[in-house]
Every structure is written in C-alpha cells, then in structure tokens.
Length: 364
Image (cartoon, rainbow, N blue to C red; front, side, top):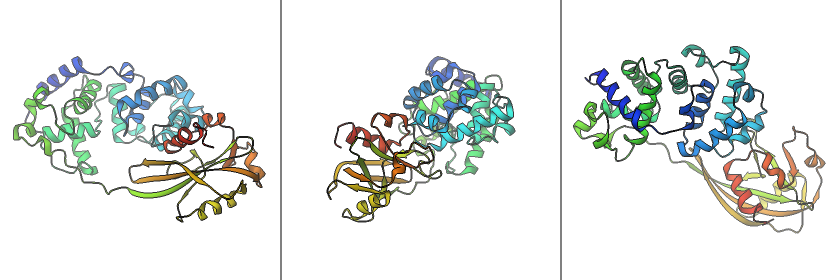
C-alpha cells in the first residue's frame, strides 16, 4: 500500500459511497443467500442486465430451501439468457450442500464457505463482508483496477499472484467497523468513477491518495495480458417440423459447454453442401418431405473463447422411424414438442434467437 493515512482514505471513500451509491435490489438485503445469488449473477455480467433476472429468481427461489428443492432444469430455465450456465449449476449444488450440511444457513467462516461448489475467493469475501460485515477481501475486476491505480501496481491482474497481492492490501486497509460498505464502495468506485477508460479522476473521492493520478499514468493501469482471439466455428442447426406442427429439440451433453441445455439439432459444419445435414437427419431416424433444405436465418453468438456462426436450416418431416422421439421420458435426449412447449425448456441464447427468428415468424 502506498504511504497514505488509512483512516482518512476510509473516511473519504465511505463518505462518497454513502451519498452516491446506486440503489440496487441486493443492497437492500443482508440475507447471505440473496447476497450470494446476486454475486454469482454479477460475475461477467452487467448490473443492468442482472437486476430483472435477480428479481425473478428471488420470486421463484426466495430461500435456500426453495432453491435446494428445485429441479435443475427449472433452475436453468430461470437462468436462461444470463449465460455461463455452470454458475447456475454450481450455485444449485452448493445450496443443496448448505441445506444438508449447515441447516440451511450460509456459513460465516472463510474456511467453510470456500468449500462450497463455485465459491471462489471473491465470492466468499463478498458474502462474508456484505452479509456478515466480516472484514474479508472481495477482490473483483473493479477493485483490482482501483488498487492498481492507487498503488501504481504494474503486475498482470490476470495472474493469481497479483490477485493475492490485492487481497493482502484490502486486508490492510479495510474498515473493520464497516467492512460491508467498504468493499461495496471499492467496487462502486471502480464501476462509476475509476472506469477502465477515461477515469473521472477530477471527481474521484480518493484522488489525493492515488499514485497513478499523481504520476499521470492512470490510463496505463491496470496491466492485463491480452487474450487469444476466440476461435470461429461454422455450425448448422436444423429446425424440423412434423405434420402436427411439433418441432424436434435435443439436450446437450451433461458436461462441457452449455451442459444440459436444450437446442435444435446442431452440428459443426463438415461440408459446404447439405450432405452433412442429410446424414445427420438420417441418424436421427427421420425422413423429409422432398429433398431440399434451405437457410432461413444466420445466427452469430460470441463466447469468451469461441464464436458460433450458425446457418439455420428448416425442413418438413414426412416420416419418423424412431418412435422414442415422441416419448416424454425425461431420459430421452431428443424429442418432438409443440411450439408452445418451447417455453418450458432452457435454451442457450443462440437457440433462443432461432426460436425468435425462424419459429416465431412462422418460417417453418
């Protein structure tokens, strides 16, 4: 930590926060379960996007008991559109553990809370400090940016060793009386004032404590190694509709990208013509009306490490040889359902776009 007066720094930061903090639904709470849910949702997702999801999720699962008792597919459907679905699955599993091992009470020790699935150092610190007012560090991207500038730290913030350095700084400067507000104030400062580009240094409440401003290097910090460009994959999705107007959907594998979500039959493009499509349709056990398929929509979806560019094909089904496709057994990974029933299944954003762009418009 730079040579500053810790008491003055705390006072300047907290005074600004008391006046300027945003009115967010989870800030009206001290329930550790609700704080937990909000923090998981906020990972890699903007606040404005999270608010309606948080409010709906709380209406469906207002307590540890309600979420622990829910079916996984119901939880994924409530999460639909937020992305990074492993967050929802891990949260669901961890909440079950809290119910079974801790009597439904979220642990208030760093040792215990850190053992829960999906709860890393940041989430643990956020729950402990915000809900329990325990002076534990909660170091997210906003906090690292603020502290990198205040202390002119040029270490790569993508490295775990750098995060640990920031955690040590927070332990040194955190307000023991107002740990909850202090951590939230650091996050708020990073979100509202000490932004990645063009930080508002002239109105920053802690500008007098900031080494980067004094040296004029605030735009150079923090240092973060560039990620590799995401890999592009050409995909083909099939919207297949039978004579009764039902569409075929399939569930993704239990592990990996978008695990257990539903989609329209979806393959990585293997040929430039339609050979791969007809081969896949044959494997499913379906015959088509006619021998042509055509593109009705193009969908692009960007993940952190991969980009899907999907050509959406539609076709009418004349005959179904695989009768299991009409069974409602939950173990079946493929099935025909009515268009109205699409609302009951969790789909990734890319395939929600297909529902909106091809099915809702009556292309099929």
